[in-house]
Length: 243
Image (cartoon, rainbow, N blue to C red; front, side, top):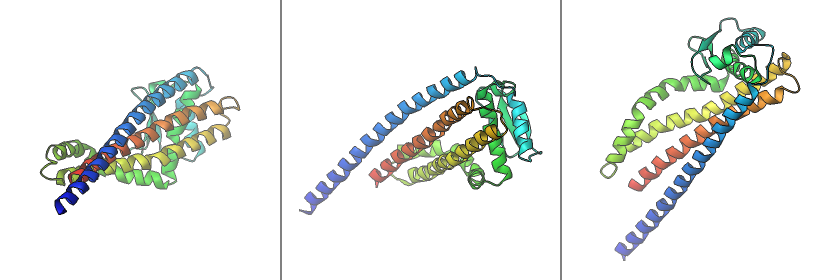
């Protein structure tokens, strides 16, 4: 009877994990489809709003937003690539891509103001930005070693679960970073839109366009965070099955 009970319990556990696998695979599929839709929508919106002109270039607008917020130690520079815009807190630069730096459009204004929003967060010691910055060293180390440790963990999972467990812990750091990034990006967009209206850069007609462009960009971070979480759950399911 003990053997039968053990077999029954094992079958139940295996069945549970089988359904868990199906759910995770389905989640991967759904996220992949949604990610593709979001990326297409983002490209479409930025292309559309790149046709709507404004009197300021991305560089001019960024410099004005920084001045208006009392920030005089941040430099606005041009960077290569498309949608490679970012704020670098280490050297205090707002980096604008070639399609934003010298363009006078709603799309360029939205992106430039958003990146300056991060500079404002930095100057005000915004809590989530400080947390994200504190996580960067750990994320860099995790990203370097995690793929190899996870691969090692999968290969030797039948013998020991230790490497997989370590890989999961490293992956959890990157997942945490993805979710901490969400409020940082959303708040930067909120600051951007508020300033565009207050400084009368955008009008009643163009402000909704800027909001729409930034909302589409924010969705990409949401999808990235959910994708990271789904991947983490997949590895956790493998780890639990091994145990």
